[in-house]
Image (cartoon, rainbow, N blue to C red):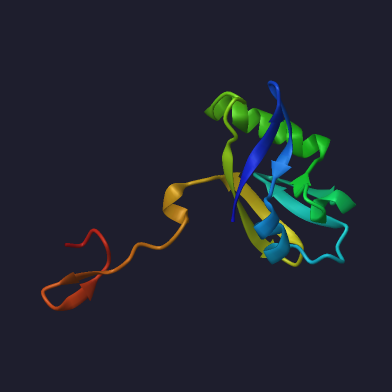
Length: 120
């Protein structure tokens, strides 16, 4: 899933998951998730607001990691898109979003045979 940094001014305040992602990937009965941030694993609590219109994850360690990524990529004026990939029960790996990860390339027809995209 693609998520975005949440900012207030120049400060990163959390991770905006989005309502559709919250419904799809987060069971309502959990109060925390585990995030893998490069080499670091942290547990982040989910507030009751997470399912009531504010699907955001806020944690000081997460914000520090996000701030570092935000400064290396762009200003906080535009949210930074990130990949949040399920990696176990209530566990996710977070990384810089790469458009090529969004969906697999569609096969193309080459001389009556299917071939991977770009093979033509």
